[in-house]
Length: 628
Image (cartoon, rainbow, N blue to C red):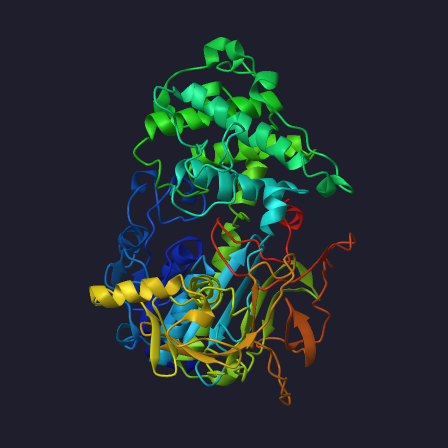
């Protein structure tokens, strides 16, 4: 009888999958083999060579093609009678609105970023469609169920924010290699190859520029008749030599710190040697600009080798030359991409040279890429397990079996002979501003902060809104959209540059702002509290948002996890969240299959695929250990 119910629920379901990557390939296959007849897939990505080791629906011949479309074609070869509709598009496109989602029985997420997850969560809440969320990182994984009014939504618990660093630490006093990576990626790379008009904290004035001159030379501007080699050496001397000497002139800064050492190209690479490879014969060096790789041009082969200062300097100059020679049309519009080999080479070399200056150990390209791209490599088996768990929970949702819903966590090591830990879903958080519409509190200096700061750092970065509308009472302060009249758009753009206190409807302490995203059908009220000063180290944004506090637990009687004869106990903490757990200590999960007493902290995973954001409470070292 149960199997007949399963069959009926499955065959009559219309399922939306978001993401056709590591989890998505496994999920589509499992859905098809489980009897689902009508599946829709959204994915904006194309297939890359690096996907082929675990995204098994794809082959070498598919590189460059749409993931959603190729996945559909691959599955139809062994399940030709089912309907699979692919969308090679961004789930945040306006086409995928609330009305679009209302046609589906359930939405299954296999996404790889927080912003898109938030967006889908809000659409599902507005459309009242159940959502099954998932993620993997290495050997760890999770599947969670979100049903409006019955379980917490995806945003009921605050997610770890990406690690940020004070500007002064990055520009003046780095003490860790990650500081050098951020400097090379977000400042130097952007200044050389990105938008020239974008604000940048790099010192751009040369040593002979007049401080009083408004037209003092920007050292990053390439001079007339200056060849690429000369330009590269001049940039090198400025950022690794002159800027360091400038920093040393402030003696108070170095009273209790180790002083950096200025590095000039002439001391590392004499003119006649700058074109040669320090790791191979001259014959290995090449002027073949079509390679797109400084390592290839210089004969450096192993990305796990730690380059010497001389080798890093050669890679720096060669990468810069390749950008301006073979990719000149892209210069001015580039942003760092961890999948761009040349960009990774440049950032690695620049970060290592800066690290050498500040006495910080150098790192290999492999290590630097992991830090720059926040990468934890995926494990195909974890993806397969998580995909199976998604389908199990989807069937429960379709059968409306709410008592059996489980959030399941995959462990790296067995605990009490369990590798899968089922947890009862938490009830909606009454303090959640997304599903409970609870107001938030923002502490901000209303006499200094601009509306742009509020939009960028709070509305977009913290609240995840894409097309925000901001109102103070009946006054519309800001709006974006394709249908705006030119004069209104100009007015809103002008408002962005105004201090909050100076806006047409002045924002002061005690003001209540209404922020809305019409596409997400999400509205949030924010109470403004004026605050004069902020701690630059702990509060680098210069503003602090409060309100996503956790609701108190309400104990349920006789609760048991699915498939386990283990009592549920309250108050056990998983990644900062209190949830009902099997009666065991899951803050540390020991490997009981051997006597090594390995201990692993159970983290809520926030991304899948090989390009994963390292959660704030995980460090790179821990991630590496889990992969050994």
